[in-house]
Length: 130
Ligand SMILES: [Zn+2]
Ligand SMILES: [Zn+2]
Image (cartoon, rainbow, N blue to C red; front, side, top):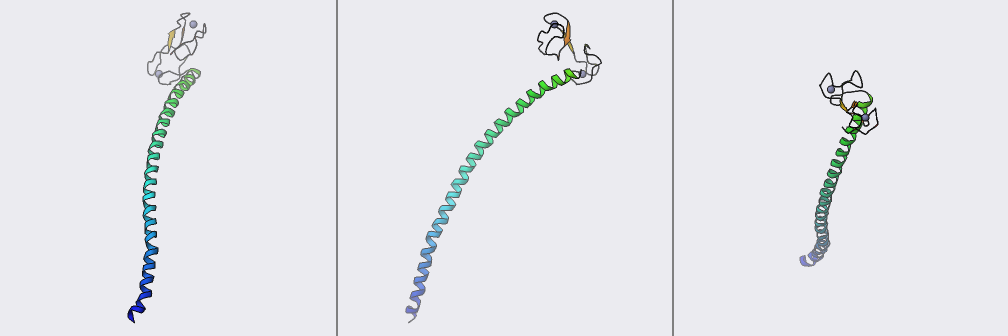
């Protein structure tokens, strides 16, 4: 009598276990899959971080070079010292009164003094290198 009553309960329990087992297996697989995926994502993240770092370095280098050229042009236009940026009294001033940096050099073509910041000699137009 007790066995007869217990039989359907046992069957139900077995059914429940059968339902639970693939679910656990599924969860286990899902967990493994997420772990693998996480590893893949981690690998990609490392590669992307390296790329981003390289690009950032190139960007900073370009910005620095770019800003140096810009600074030269700005200081040339504003008649400023090439080293410290102090305003010069005249465009033909030889030395900075604040930091003592040399501002002029003789042109290699005509020998006339021109500003070191100048891209070209103002007397003959020869290109000047800083
Ligand atoms: Zn100066
Ligand atoms: Zn010249």
